[in-house]
Image (cartoon, rainbow, N blue to C red; front, side):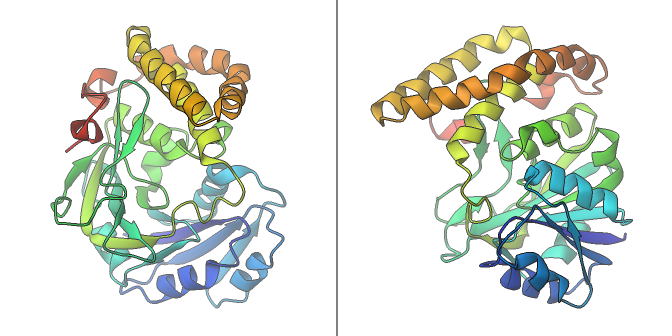
Length: 310
């Protein structure tokens, strides 16, 4: 299977050398390496272009992670595409193990992501989506004590370091660029699952991640709040409105306690212009699904350790 590495970049000068060094050191050499630059002004695109075997695709302005990922996937010919954040350093056998896990029926593969500075701390061991709209990253900020050392299926992969089957991604329309960044990988994972693809988890494929290091000045809380509402409007049945409203009320309460309510409400308002369009897509998305939404997003607790999945 041919495989390409696509690296979305926005002002990633602090990280780009370490990321590209780890790509160059892979035991399975990628057929193509493309850096998609989102209008960086820190010289990181030029540094990437100076690397042998690295092609830089410049978008001219910051169009978001989702757009950069789509342009990178469209620019390569490989059957499988690894998406890697600039603030990620891959273990030498990462690509070899990830491609080995891309079995028939798998549209994507999630590896084990650990903290860049302290590899004993987990960042992500596959994603879990709940019916209240929350995406949990399994094991996040927990000690890597072996609980996530077994391979298996997970809901979706964190696109900070993930492998995708190209025809599967293109078959569901790619990343939704309206989400810009954050939860765009969850939205894609849901559409892949509804289309009948599953996601494998390969714990031996380890990527060290700085955590939001490649996001620049963007506020994770803003985009997560906005995009949670958009994802729910786009895909969730109306009968799940109760869990979604419960979670929204809880988040608003926590924002108020943390004196962040105004910012939280701005993020909520930012979703409003796109909500009607997302809601109109729900029927088409669900009517064409090969897997029922109830199976794609199974019921699980909304609180406690079990809420984050097995």
